[in-house]
Length: 275
Image 1 (cartoon, rainbow, N blue to C red):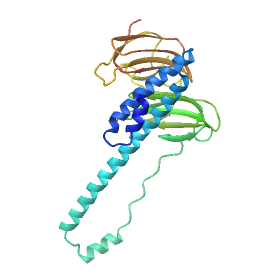
Image 2 (cartoon, rainbow, N blue to C red):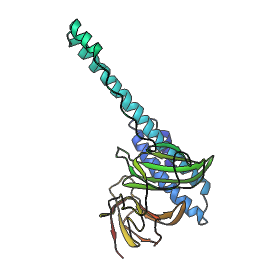
Image 3 (tube, helix red, strand yellow):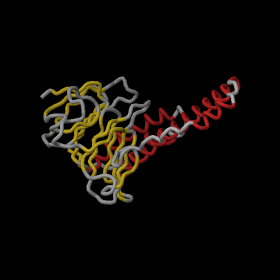
């Protein structure tokens, strides 16, 4: 229901910020429901539908806000240009000629081949299988998303609203990997030092054995948020190993000793190792 409300509001400028928040909450609840369904609980179809609707609503929020901001900027620039043209004196003929003869500035260079960014990438041709780390972009409503699909089948989907997002690209040639709301996407080299700031744990994704060590961790739910929900999970590839959540108080989560698996925290104001 939250994801559906987010989809309804996503195309209304300004108001769609609240729609985005509802969509994100629906996405989290949909993932939780999908995990519970995999353990025998009913509602797997509704959970998958909620995840898809929430992702579509989030993309709709980003696109509609971008169009709205672009339209406002264009209108402001047009007014400013007209004002300058009204007060600016006409340039002498010799100055006009000098301007005409001035060489054009060189075109900016494009990013090198292989540089990954938001959008779709073809596995085996444009992106290789492996683990990737991306930084969630800062915005009014941050939401980083990575997914992989093969035709109509969704192979995996991950989200984060702050910190880093870690995503495992499966070796399925011809499948499509999609990134949105992230920057600095790079393939993780297990032998190289971590690119994530491991001196202080926070919300986001953490690589076991490199960013975070096995043991017990305690997360304090951020009750100042609009919809408090602290969630801790651990997964390897597309397999979810464990997930715990709470709407208030603390969440105690045990990180299993599985190197290169991923631990994800969200909705916490503080996280610390307790055992």
